[in-house]
Length: 404
Image (cartoon, rainbow, N blue to C red):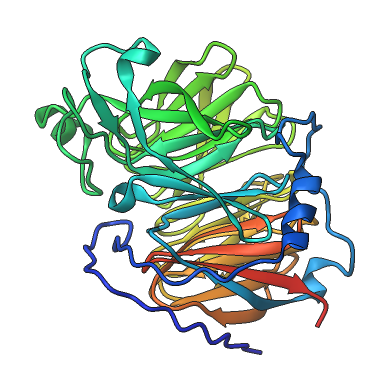
């Protein structure tokens, strides 16, 4: 059954096409939120956003299981944004990464109120990094929170300023990047209390996706142009290993016990397994064409992978590393999110301009929701049970997942 949510998304400004999809930015008007809702968000997260939390953070919202709920549009957020991704802290904050089109990360409360706009500008010298005098800009792509939600790491598609090579591109290779003199890429760390960049870490070339292990020990970064995975020791604040992956690594997921990482290799049909005890790869398994994004079930038994080429989502049984279910969701499905109870999946279909909700047990389609032009990122906010969608034409949609 299809539910079409009518969301009139005003789109102005040109777009350019790349291997991972057109990039565009065009603002709409942000709907206001009540002071009471904002106060609830601040109470939920703590006024300083610095309280201690235990893993897992993703508490299950009260009410019926997620696969017995339906999505309803609550709000369309606009402004000077060009969101590539959205990421929920599960403690009352949602971060949107706005690429090189606005050079910002915008931070919202779970109620949808804009809390702060963080520029992607840094002085590298202040972080002990030489060779890049003056101001450096990034291009925020994706974000990953530490388990206590006190910090969030943000990848940068390109770096701009003195001493940097040309802008990253989606058809690059290690050889082409080296020939162009593109040798430095960085991720930023943002303190969720001060909402300021407080650390800069060098990784591989053109980092795209990143995640923090559940035990808080490692930050893992998939490097698009150098075809590898950076392993960053969070305490040391630096890369301690670089593992070859193959052409165009992107999506990442980690087992709940922090022992195994899974890396989607978008230029292939495979997911690579990484042993996080030895920091070595342990083979791969086939999932289908162009695997892009991965989420893992809360119990660690299943992996769910979006296949950009065929527009499918597959379910992998990790006991056998084999695909046990497949669902077609739309044209060029991109990012996935999983409900806190593990019973529902949410996927954005870039060319179909829709979100699909699936039942995790058998990948049955539960709902399709219209979004407007080019939905690209999605996150599940366990603080509210809401689903946030980044629309590349310049909006963020906030949808309630609630009792019909």
